[in-house]
Amino acid sequence: MILSGTVHSFINMKTFAKTILNFYESLDPDFELPAGVEMMNPFKNEITLQLAKSFYLKFYNDSNPRSYVFGINPGRLGGGITGIPFTDPLQLKIVCGIDHNLPLKAELSSDFIYRFIKTSGGPERFYSHYFLTAICPLGFTQSGKNLNYYDSNELYQQSRPFILKTLKEQTKSGALKETAFCLGEGTNLKYFEALNKELKLFKTIIALPHPRWIMQYRRKSMEEYIKHYQKVLPCD
Image 1 (cartoon, rainbow, N blue to C red):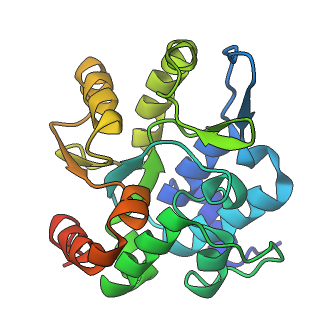
Image 2 (tube, rainbow, N blue to C red):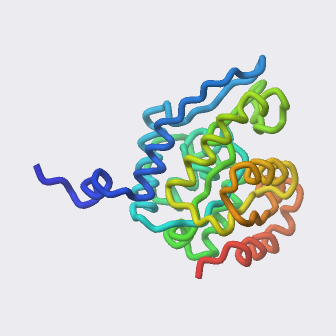
């Protein structure tokens, strides 16, 4: 049987898409959660997994290294549904061109990120330079709301070995080690710097204001923040 070019390359080449999808599919958290905390593993959902495969095969089906941009952890209205960090169902369909039947709900962080991506030449250009990911690849909720990995000291201490392991593993997909970028100039940066000091993955970490913070508290200045993102994350 002769395979199509796309499928054949996905099976036989060590592409960025193949290695990161293998990473996501093999996520196997083995830590206990604090009382009242629930975990989101979008890659256990077959529909979400297929959407992620479509996305990464479209934008990452090559062997080129990329700069890594780290968020916190998947949110229930964005990556927790689509399997793609900072990408809600609306942006996935309208901007990325990945068709699906999910409700077209918007999420604040995704809204900002894709406004920025559009001004940077679109998703094809941006994703050829950068990989959007998260410090913790799985998400958490409590009482139906998003919970950051660092919001609970008990959660962080329980998940820390898993975070260290997965940070190291996901960079094997093709991370440029000179500089990593952190979305969040406060707590996320503090924790990322400590984790990176232990793992020694990146020489430098550059922080940017978190998209959700911008959209919640600085929305009137959104265009200024988009220009700031363009300077820090150029797509030349």
